[in-house]
Length: 442
Image 1 (cartoon, rainbow, N blue to C red):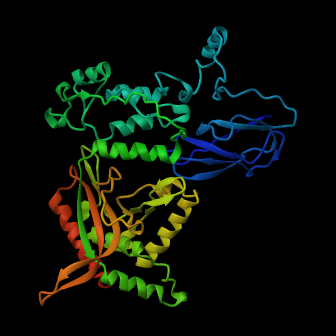
Image 2: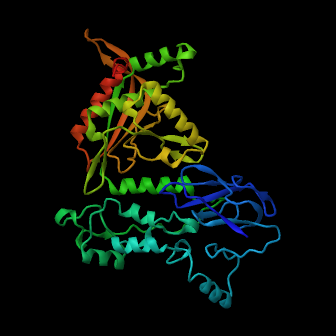
Image 3: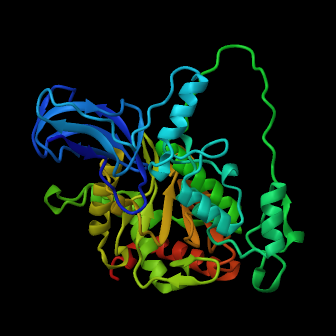
């Protein structure tokens, strides 16, 4: 009897995967546990294993196709056995359909899976429609992240995240007139009124550019990053402050680790690892920096789960060192290296890339001193780490001496934390980095 092998579910947030490469072809024999294809989620690459034994009778998708999770990707059975296409597998038309074919196609799509039902310019899943209607938002105005350019529920949730409720008149105007709503309105409790609505930003008209041009689809990690960065800037009150920390002890400690005995396992500890350690220990002193701002409430966490941005071949990923406040410097270094290696190889698991309470991003190796990091919402703060450079300071005798300093850029969500408390945290962090050899005693 023919058995369907489905695209497995990867965590609670992954709704689809892209098939990168088939490892089997039609007619091949497979056993349970054999890898049938390599697939990419929005964060990592996975090996999809067969859940059936027999002959591969049909591959339902091609390499490069985006497939909803828990949908059939191939059928396994006895050699020569006839199979029927699963109702949830819808093939793209390769030529303009005839009127008769269009009617037939419409009949085929009446029953199916929510993710293949199209509506509007991009196509909107029923769950996304329901969420959009409840939130008073036009789903066709959103950037889709679902298979084949469909708007799915998570796109709507991201757009509505943290936004104040709408008055009935505002909701009606929002849908009917193509307007946009601010995160907070002028009504009671921040309720958005019709007077708070503004005109939507219209896209630029197409322009003919001379010379050759390369078109690259925005998909997978790049698409998710773009959506999250846009949502971060659109839904938060971001404010950045810059400071410099004395890096003398930092450089000295790094040099001592590098020269230490190999059996101690300390030679691989980097400047970034030491900064992560200092951040974790400093946040414990300022728990309000270890918070998620959710609009109508704030969550302050007891332990520090520290995210650190990693540049991978597929885009920016942020693996999270869990319970960083309870780890030693070597413990943080070892765990971050494990997570970074998995992220770069495309093997990081969903749990490795979620659950952060504070994020650090480091551009120092690229020659950047200070910059404006973008919040990883709903976290209330992110620290940007720059390079080490010499800064002139006046000594006790009135002479100027040059001391190595490392640049730090702290971006906060002013909705969740005010400038003065955040500045106190940054000042303390600078002091802890300046005396990081003493901080190791904690």
